[in-house]
Image (cartoon, rainbow, N blue to C red; front, side):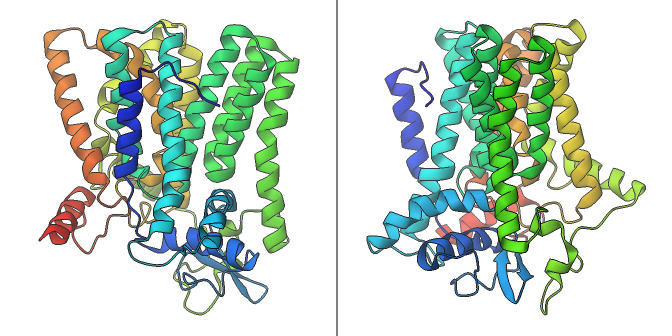
Length: 416
């Protein structure tokens, strides 16, 4: 699907790193919930997770006298496709270090991460980048954000990030060629992202506006929307099958009204003051998204500069910026726990690849000696942070309230 113009050594490097950066152990409720659905689909042919080994996860809903995962089902359906032959060959999901779980992560989340890096490499080629500059920026994209950390475990945020990258590639291809097929594939991957991580559906709408701006009511727009809404309609049908409603099961408070539930009435709304404080801490608090992705300190100003100068991609920058802000505002209003046990704010991970698009001219943006030193420093810190994130993307606060420190302590505990 994605053929990237990368040299064989780079491709082998990416594959090799992919093979050894999988964390094949279920670390908490979130993973257990997704694997409960995966296991139930394969072993029992049902969305009901009552008889799964992971049925006691706290991330579940109670509907019509049965428990279900409260997670969007499409990622687990993808995992089930991988687990099906594994199970029939004798492998089985369970807690602890697990080969079946390793293969599920490797052939879903990690594979799509790899394809997203190759897609980004194609994006750079569209910008005319070659040689050492091209290679350096590909590596920066791959390893200097927590998108790399989150590719080590099974989660919908990494899948959404990867699918947004591929969607953006095909959008740019369409922008350059006007090829309807490229518009359709772009819409499909934007839709897939929204079906896996619902708030990222904002980008499907945002880029639809750009397609309309360029081509009006055209076959390209129709193809983009038609394929884009297929995954979302599928998601709606699956929700209806489970609950009798098109609404996502996790936003219906009554679904959490069961004995032992820790979620109270489900979705709650923060006050204005609480939302502002929450947004501030989400970005620069102990789990702050900016601290865990330091290159954003340079990338965001670079994107803003493109918008101010109305460069070739200023409108894309506007859509990416506005959609990102809306997503942050949404979580600031409707959530209270900063993502739970997570390495930084997992909900914002899908924003990274689109923001990181503006890496393509970051070397020029930091041309001065002082700025270049700042870039090199931030790159070094970013790689360290992303690698430490591989220890456990679902950072355990029992080790420390700061996820970076918690992961170091957990690593030392494992080694010693």
